View 1 (cartoon, rainbow, N blue to C red):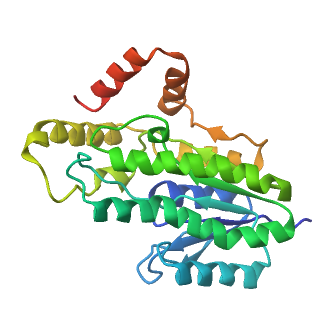
View 2 (view 1 turned 90 degrees about the horizontal axis):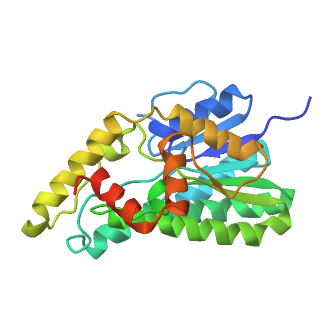
View 3 (view 1 turned 90 degrees about the vertical axis):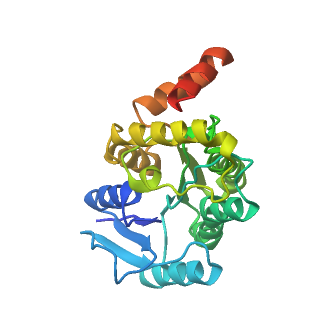
Length: 267
């Protein structure tokens, strides 16, 4: 019997990351999941927690070294951990934008760079980066978040070209609104500008209402598992709204897409 695939999923405390780690475990994989504090994390059957702050180089390296020491390999990396932010671009400080990019983009880069030497040595692996439909669509009052996901898209496509020579492939998974706490508890820019209050509040309420009626994270988790083991595709949009939005963006004229997006955000 062959050895099970070794999978690392970042951000498994809740939401998509937790559902994904569970799906990999049910498939028989050896699963490691990152949490910021093991002492407060709720145990997840079949998943070994690794304490890791993805915003710190040393913490990331310690976590990867721990897995390699125990397993000698990492076959699948799922960069899932992320955060959100609501606010007009004008009222978002550089510090707030930098903090969001550190979590959503630079942390993904940090973890990937720590894992890649081992994948190159073993001549194979899959990296799945959890993006968003806002990685190919604009997002009024979530512009910095959308910009971070656009960055993830460019980084991922470029990285795939660089590492396929080593038998490694990179895939983007692009969910739409999903029933998690990410958007329900999204922080807002601190230095608000009164002129944006009306639309910003409408957009924030529209996001909350969309999340409340959105699918559970299990569907996205299934897409991530498929991205890890099925035939390689650069982009995978979960069935439902995400898949529809990608088709609309590709085939519909810009005017109707723009109007539909403004309606979605309550503008």
